[in-house]
Image 1 (cartoon, helix red, strand yellow):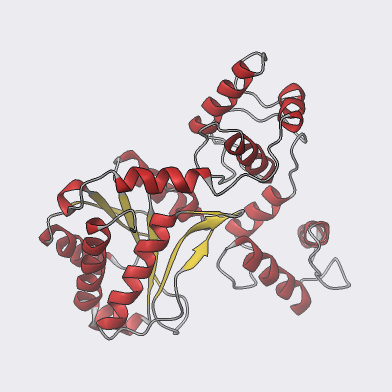
Image 2 (image 1 turned 30 degrees about the horizontal axis):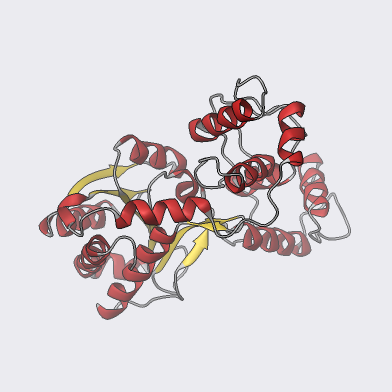
Length: 315
C-alpha cells in the first residue's frame, strides 16, 4: 500500500492495463496486470514489480517529443527513443536495432539525419529534429534494417569456429557449468572469454567490451519446467542470429536428454537488450539437472555454438 502502489496503478492504467479497483492496494488483480505488462514487453513473467519491470513501465510512458534526447551516461532509455530509432532506420540511417537505448550509434545516426536536413548536427533530438522526422516519416519500411545488416555481416564471415570470439556469461550460481561450457566451446576451436556478474546489465556491458561475435548467457531457471533459451526481440524488431543460436541450443539440449520448456523466446530483458552482439540467454533447469548433468548441458551448448559458427547467417 501507499504512493508507490498508486503510481504503479496509474502507470498500468495509462498503458491500458487493468490493475484492480483500489489504487492503494497491490491485489491479485494488480499482480495479474503486472504479468500482462511483462508478457507484452518480453520480460520474465512473475507478477512482481521489481527493478526491471518498473524501469520498463517508466520507459513505456515516454512519447516522442516529451523530452530532449541526447547522449549521456547513464544512457537515456524509453519508447520515445524506439520511435526515433525506427524512423531513422526507415529513412536509411544506420542506427542499429530499435532497442530504446540512446547510445553512440543512435547519436551518430541523429547527427547524420540532421546534416542531411539542414539542422545543427548536435545529435540532440529536440523539437526541430522531431518535426523533421515527422515530415519525412517513411510509410511502412520493408523489413527490419538492423536485422538485415546483422544477417549480412554474419554471412560475410567464413564458416569456422576460429572466426568467432564467444563470451560465456553467467549471472550467478552456475560457475561450474560456465567453466564446463567454456571448455566445451574451446575444444571446438572457438576463442572464449568467461565472465560473471550478479547484475545482468553490468554483465552485458562487460561482454560488449570484449568485442566478441557471440554471447552465451547462463542462468538458473526460476521454474521447474526445464531449460529455456531466449534471444533479443522487441518493438517489431529482433536479432535473427540470436534466434538461430537459441533454436540450436534447445535442439542440442533436447537431444542430450534435457527437458526443454517450449521453443526459443523473443525477450527484452536487460541482458539481451544491452548486448551489442548476437546473444542467447539459456535458463538451465531444474537445479538438479544443472548439478547432475552440467557436463552434458555444456557439451550440448558447445555443439550448438559450433553449428551456429558453421552457418551464422542461417542460410
